[in-house]
Length: 430
Image 1 (spheres, helix red, strand yellow):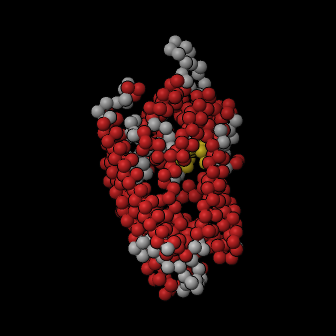
Image 2 (cartoon, helix red, strand yellow):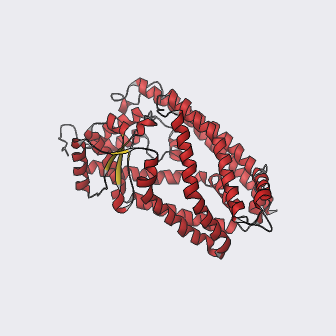
Image 3 (tube, helix red, strand yellow):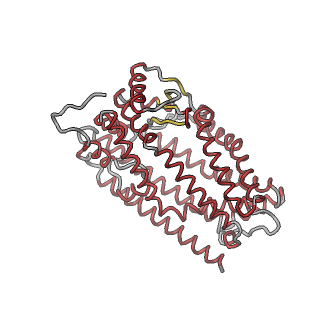
C-alpha cells in the first residue's frame, strides 16, 4: 500500500515539476521575444539593437534546448525507476559480483554513472559545437572536448570511488547514526576540495599564468589593501581556449586564496572596470557570503542524509520506485542512486528561496564594490559583460525568480545608478 502511494506521489510531483518548468520556459520565451525589437530604455545608449537581438535569440535557443533535455532526462528518470531500468541493471551486476559485497555496490553506482554519461554526451556535444558555436561562443576543439571528458572520468574515479567506498562502509557498519558520520566525512571532503581545487584540479584543465600587467596589478593590490584581503596570487586563466564568455573569481581557502581572471575578461574590460568587477567578487568574501553558503550547504546535506537514513530502511521507498530491495544483500548503493534521482523532483518548487538568498548577496556585493570603487565603473563593466555574454536584458520575472542567481540586468543597474551622485557632483576617483 505504501509503495503504491509513494509511486503515485512521485509521479504527481514529476508531472507537476514538468508542468511548472514548461510553463516558466514558455513565459520566458514569449517575454524575451516580445521585447526583442527594442533595447530597454536604460540600455539604449550603451547596447546596440543587434547585440540585444542576439541575446534574445541566444536565450530562446538555450531555453528551447533546455526543454528538450528536460524531456529526455524525465524519460530516462522514469526508465531507471518505474520502468525497471535500475532493477535490470542490479540483477545483471549480481550475476558478476554477487549481491552482498562492496564490489557489487561500487559497480552499480559506476554503471549507473556511465550510462547516464553516455545519454548526456550527445546533448553536451550539441550544446558546445552547435548551439554555442552558432552564436560565436565556442572556442573548444573536438579533441579538447573529449580530453576534458576523459579527465572528468579519471578524476571522478580517483576521487569519487574512495569517497563512495567510505560512505557505503559507514552506511553498512556504523549503525543507526551512519548518516551523521557520513555527513562529517562529506563535509571534510568538501573543505578539502576547496583547498585542492585551485592548485591541483583546476590546473589539469587550464593554464594559470601570473598577471603580468603591472598597471592593473597595482590597481588590484591597492584595492586588496583597502579592503583587507590577502591573496596567494593574481592569475590569468586561458578560458578563451574553450569559450568566449568571460569571468573573474577567487578560489581557495584560508591563506591559499587566489584571484583568477579569464583572459577574455581582461581583453574586454578597462583596468578600472576590472577593478570594480573584482571589488564585487571580494564583496562576497568580506560580507561572509562564501561562509554562509558553505554553512547552508552543510545544513542541507545533514538534513538530506538524515532523511536518507530513514528512507534506506523502508521497503516502500525502493518498490515505489520500481526496485525490489535485496533481502540478503546490501541496498545501500541503490538507496543512494534512488535518492539522488528523486530529490530534485521534490525540491524544485523551493528554488526561488535559493535564488532570493543569492540575489540578496549580489546586491550586498554590489554595495561593497560601490563603497570601494567607482559605481559607474561597475555599471559600464556589467553592461559590457551582458553584451559580450549575450545575457538577455528582458528575462521573464517569474522564470528569473526560479532560475537566476543574479538579479535581472535592469534591476541591478537601477540599484547601482541610484548610488551615483547627482549630475554635476564629482565622483571621487579610486
